[in-house]
Image (cartoon, rainbow over all chains, first blue to last red; front, side, top):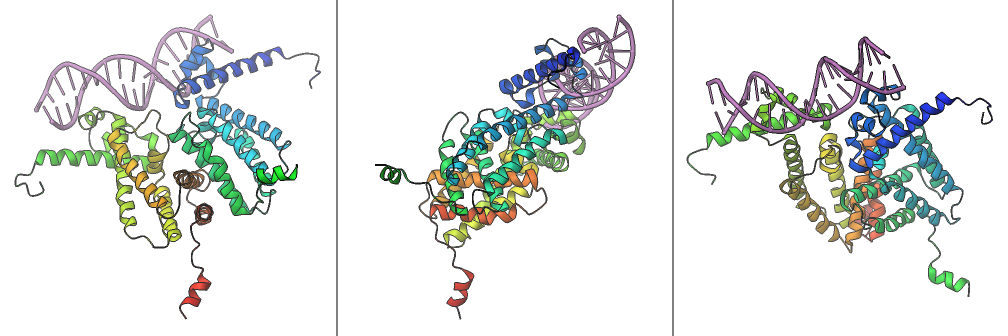
Length: 210
Length: 210
DNA sequence: GTCTATACACCGATAGAC
DNA sequence: GTCTATCGGTGTATAGAC
């Protein structure tokens, strides 16, 4: 595939235009909010008239759908990278994964809202765009449950806990790090409850290598 | 005030009309979603034309604002009632309060979204409507922290946990009770972490009264 | 004061010329 | 593929009838 001698220049150009449209949409979402995206605004930013966008996307919802899909696909790649380089200690690995999710979430409000909240009335991801989200969740489930004797129910509580903290951040502490400071404590609560062994304390670590 | 001999019939009629408008708005929200409220639809249901609504509310946002305010005011009253009739055992009281919040939340998706999520682009409650929400939160904080040696940080984790579970319910289990089954377990995780004494077990209760 | 009629600016979407 | 023109919808503003 990669070494096909004849490049499909038309397809390349089409893909590039799609990319430009999506980039413009993300830009508007970050500047003014997810719901503030209008076809006229997107079109202006890419040098078109609004109806021309319909040559590249079926509808405005299709643009949201593509954004949803690529946001989850990007997190899928990052989570996959992270998984191959996790601390051996179960609780340490959990903290790294939780922090990774939290940081990705709060880095971009619009992106998080699109991925996890229902801020666009009537938007529902297509099966195709939903697939990477399912992949992320299922890998998360298998990794977390493998950390110890973790039930599916406890995994759902873990997910809820992270989602709740992110929600708390966006609701009351936008731009601050007050909620971020709660994350480690909350994760430890959960880890204690499901019986993950405690981290070796710094004091003991000192003693271990004198 | 209450025994004023001359009733203000005009003010009564005005208040009644306002009530009708809000009821119609709630009705639409429950039927079709919070964002599906249109002035024309509301007006039709109360037998008016859309612009006539401006005689009773400054804008559509003012309608959302009144709805937000009365939803929190209603919960404020209910939480106040509940507080006067709480079990003595701290952990039992916590379970009752958490269940009460969870039940109120999932009973009405539109109401919960208006109260706690950002589904209406650009909506921000006025200071007046926000007041009961603050009252609820602050009383919750004082009651929960008084259950034991609970820090403000741990109270925020408690809030996040409840919010996360409700979010999980709406995202994946609308109409089901799968997430509801996680609530008690999650609350116990938190209660263990902050050091609330365990409930007397059923076995011990049996022994205590032979 | 309360409501209607009319209008405006904006939205997503479609039809059809080029 | 991109354009112009246009449609039905929205929230909102205002003039004027009663």
